[in-house]
Length: 628
Image 1: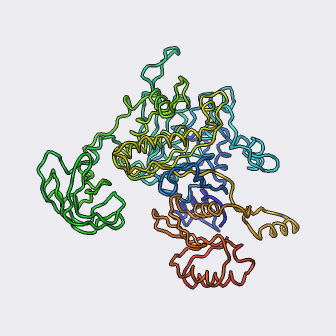
Image 2 (image 1 turned 180 degrees about the vertical axis):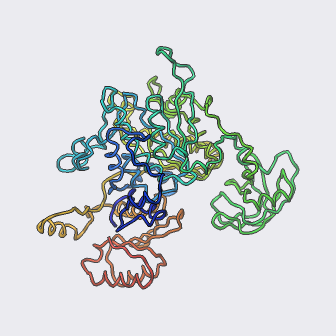
């Protein structure tokens, strides 16, 4: 295991090889051949239309530097760690985005971010000396002391307008994050970025460069204030949200039609009860394998199953009859079944998604957002949830839940992953959980927030919150608890797993140029675990992440073996992290049926013969064996 995050450069080279294999010579690009193939489409002259700024080439180099860091689970900070599919990551978002590349490449349906607006009063991190090593940079900005010990999570520098590279600093901060974010989006994925007048012009040019001008969808204009301040020359009431698709041609429509319009009931309380036969193959949103025949009732409808229903992997395996106050006849029911739009809800009712021809009739959102909540709503929501009666509030300018809820709703997908890597006070997570409780959606969030220190005189600090990350986590806890108090929302996932960005648990090999240093390093790598007292679960999660398994992979421990399953990619891995390797254990591993095996080298206790025999036995059984 090389321990590195996914290499952006290597992935791009692979893509280029697929398209133009003939332009590679000795594994390098031959630009003369490429020019010959592309002909007049190649531009050689220096004068061309592009966005350029101080430090751009260095920022690309920073982007291409792999991360060796890992994510450490924090169960005591989490809510329902072993049950939830939501993720909260505390750490610097550039490093986190690099780490997520293997596990979530092309997996995210929607990204929303509310980054620093570069008003001249913002503080954000950017590496302003790209030539220095990461160790030197961390020591210089105060992340580590001279002994290499971690002091704090980064350094916040005020980017004032008097700074000669005021715009360049902001672009250097934004560019690599947006570049990495694009990699995570699905082919029909969408990104929404909030911004104001200070950088909207540069942001659009930057996103045109990264996402492609052809993938621009719309610039939304959000009315952020009910009553503007008239102290300035022009009363500003609007902020912007730039919207781009990974591939805009795959984005049919952004709509926030109501629940009744985006999926429809097939039972009407005012109708007479009738019997219908439901054909096998429909979906079931409740995680069960069997529904016993009998009557089921909730707040809005009742239904009687006349037959038992058998379910496998969320799909009904048999035809069944039921009695209810149906809106439609048997022919329509058969059509809904054959089209794959009918489903059993989590409360065992029946609903249907819109047919394709009905979706075309939905109204698109407009680019003027007048009734999507206001800044003051966001502040009031936080004051209410934290029970703080202070005009200043616990967090500056939080976005309102309605704004983010409508943005999430507009992608018309109730089972997807939403990412926010400038999580702030956690509005995105709050909005997602609330929306799931309203429409029985199964959306999941990944939130990333740096533990930015709250100012000593701030309301947050006076109420016991030391960092922005602490505010975000506490908001999610309180919002989830409030949502759970609603009796109609008992099945909604209001938990979240907390992970913390930390250095790798494994020692990193360093290039040396003399025999003495090489000998010392070889001696040091007899055991490549940094600390023999490291929690093996921390080691396991680093292996999971760096092998491309997602953070919600199921983990089952059987004696000294961990069985890891990533259902999203239908792959399994077996990890052996403690004990001692022997012939009996090798036989047990071989017979497990798992085709990907990871074992720590130290478990062989220096027995290279046994290690070689295990490798050969795994090879004979067509098992991918990796020794770390």
